[in-house]
Length: 110
Image 1 (cartoon, rainbow, N blue to C red):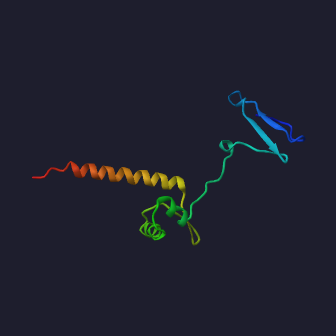
Image 2 (image 1 turned 180 degrees about the vertical axis):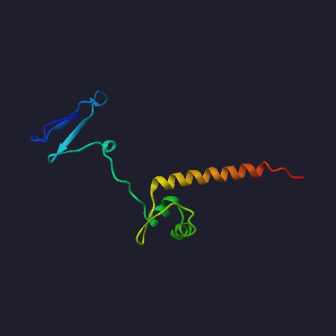
Image 3 (image 1 turned 135 degrees about the vertical axis):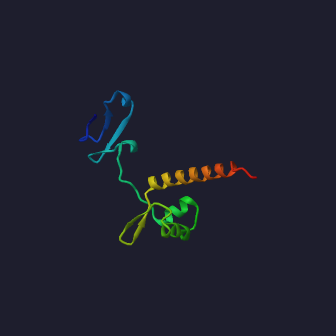
């Protein structure tokens, strides 16, 4: 719970015992909250943003989408990527490759 003096544009003090020391500035009649308390909508990545993040070419991303190799969203003709799904996909791919490498090294040669 926050106690605020919005008319004087002063500060708000968190009444939660864990957050007693944190002060939140009030500005223009709106309470400015720390980023950790703001629930923002998921931000989807474009092809260019994902290519930059993964350090690959945009054509590689389009190829993965065409082969249905990477998780993606289509809205009409817009192609977008959910960062959470991409992180999970990357972890799964890394684990799959590790497991493949592990089983290949365990093969017995006669």
